[in-house]
Picture (cartoon, helix red, strand yellow):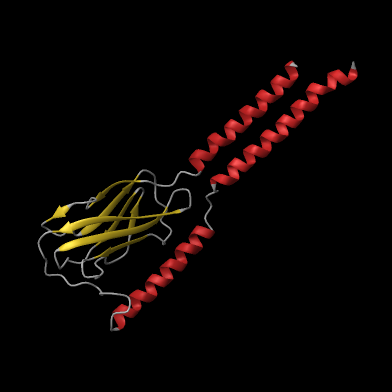
Length: 197
């Protein structure tokens, strides 16, 4: 009976170890601060968006930051920069007063994409003009913006599919299988002495 208990204890500890490894392996990056912050009311337009995460962000060329104004215009301009856990994106000089939405999608440290939105309000209108009002806006700029969005969505999907992060369900399934094997071995070891006697 002591062999049975010992084997069951070993199998249980192995399962707990696997579950403990699964938690950090599945942890996505979490946004811990932003500038502008959620709900900010600003009289002066920011020159860039800064996003700070709890872990490093992979600089894989798939990170995106978009800023949409109250009239649907796009205000992010230039490449997204990654410095460890800080992501920055330059902005065009903002225009109309009203609510602006920062949408972001970054490649998490575990290989999964993380996305969210942050809203802030510009209380005093600026003199800037947006890059385009919508993907279908007339002119070459609008068409290129729409094509760029489609390309970025495809790139993000490919990055998510080819990511090195392992989903948590794989770890849980492995722990269950290991536990079942351990219990089977324990039961066989426990019944062996009885058969010999």
